[in-house]
Length: 295
Ligand code: MN
Image 1 (cartoon, rainbow, N blue to C red):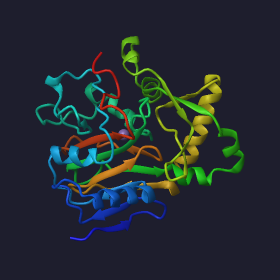
Image 2 (cartoon, rainbow, N blue to C red; image 1 turned 135 degrees about the horizontal axis):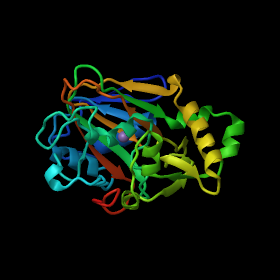
Image 3 (tube, rainbow, N blue to C red; image 1 turned 135 degrees about the vertical axis):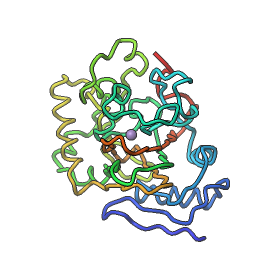
Image 4 (spheres, rainbow, N blue to C red; image 1 turned 60 degrees about the vertical axis):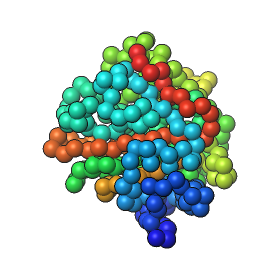
């Protein structure tokens, strides 16, 4: 079946139909996906009925895996193998973990727009999230193209932010969304890192690199830094920049973390199982965890 690509939003995001991910990806397929990602920044590969092994093999065609942070999970509590980030609402026995439970507390931070693993010092590239089981309603994922956001910024703002470096701090970001009780030991697992506030993509376009983990500007007092970051966040999250993804089973949604933001919308009911599994790839570097394995 020939590959076909259809746009899903006026600014960015496309679906790809006809890709067979059950076989090692051909050079043509890899190129087609890279091209689609450079243009659309979010690509939804439809009907990707694949195993975890296929998912991991396909992901590695685009860069080394970034292994998920352990966040204190021992292997006994882990539902999936270590290469996969578990974005489900399921426990190790495949039973639903209630939305209002302590165990889901950390995941609520993902309801603020963010770029995955921007708290990692390694150069994060893409996330590839596969819907094994998706609920019949709810649980949409929202995306923003921050290249389009950068292009739309007033000239004055672009001049004001040129050359700035942002601080990305997982735990401070979570505290800003209401998490309490973060200890020094927890902070030590994922210390703050820095990234340019404006990134230049390999193909030349610039993007605004902000989101929920960005909690400071190097050399700025915190109140001013947060004021600027909140101003940029408010600009970026205007409805016109947002693509709402409504999941179908076996959608493999690929997004470029360097030039998009995304947020989860809560599945507030505990009626439905949601089994979504993510790989993350870096631009280069060793295959190591984005955070220390446990605290
Ligand atoms: Mn995320």
